[in-house]
Length: 519
Image 1 (spheres, helix red, strand yellow):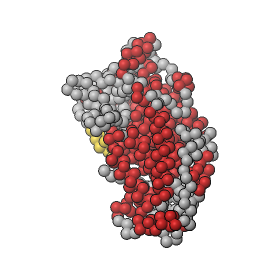
Image 2: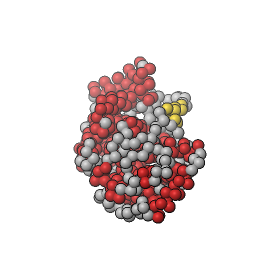
Image 3: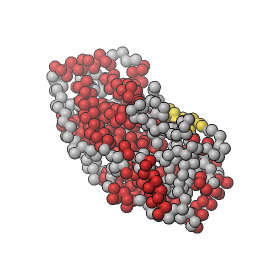
Image 4: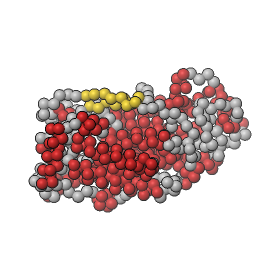
């Protein structure tokens, strides 16, 4: 199964659209055409990145890496000879692999993760008994497949992927500039590298570090894809030999380091509370608390049969950039009472959109829908981030830092939003006669997940790329407003979510300003 520069994403409307309203089954496939990404020498090697603050590691030397053999040693010379044999008579397939992976290790593995998320972002269908079976991590390819890569799941997967890549690369940079082994083509003029060669030391290989760290995380997040991931990791490794960029010991050291660091990162994942995020036994108590707050009508599933709410306890998962006490302080205040003028005004606004929706509003709603079969709102923002980093010619470690800041903000945004959703248990517009064409999520309305994710993402990316901050803010506003145009959120859902997301993003930015990166 190849992954190409033409991104194939299938948007499939949720079964909720089909239930009770006489809607037709609608699906459409979309291809996202992106410019083919070329290899480049980074504008800055970030030589001091080994001193940047990691997320899970206590420091960049926590995982030990032995000193490599000298480039004058018989062992290294034998590796150079073997490398020349690997490079001889490259096939078209091998050159394609070199070009593909040459676009960037972090770039490609993030792309792979997003496309896996899209493939697995399909909610389980009901069975003959009218129940919705839960995907089984121990039998991931059974129906329904594990995981259901919904927005919170995807945000978490991409966060751990990015943190593992970043921490592993911080460690790699420490050893690169400690040992300073030059690239093979700089040691032996008989080796003509196929890709651009910078002044970055080659031991350990940054590509091998990223490949191993990514594989370790993604095989846990998508256990049914292990053979595919193994094949991609092998191809990535071989591409560095075919291109003349690394000798075997560079790659072996990188793989060892990436695997060890990612194992520590996944230790955090196993203890972050995700295992109880779908605890349906808690919803009755949540509903009672919402009623005690004055809510006269709670959210209920609009599907037939009624689907259990998605991840009602995700708000209890461990955050990255602030503690639980802070998260509670970030929780938006209550939405309008259902018998209030503010609620009537918001409902009337949606009724007007439903009656008089423009083509531009429909376009915006569809563009940002990011529903089933897509790589979700967090994935949408990751695509924006990796493209911006590539355009800026970031080093691998700075690209990874960008995605780690984004990823932790997106996971934090999901946690805060889901906490808010199930704290207030507020009904969706569909319970008041509104119909949607962009898929109906199976969880409470207040606040908007798109808005929260987007507010956090825009704040982080605006910090990393200040010359583009205005455009990111406009994107976030459009993403937020799109949920009104799609008729699945009230204005107050969107405004409160966007404001909360910005505040969440500020915590990630504060972390970034203190990580020693000089940005």
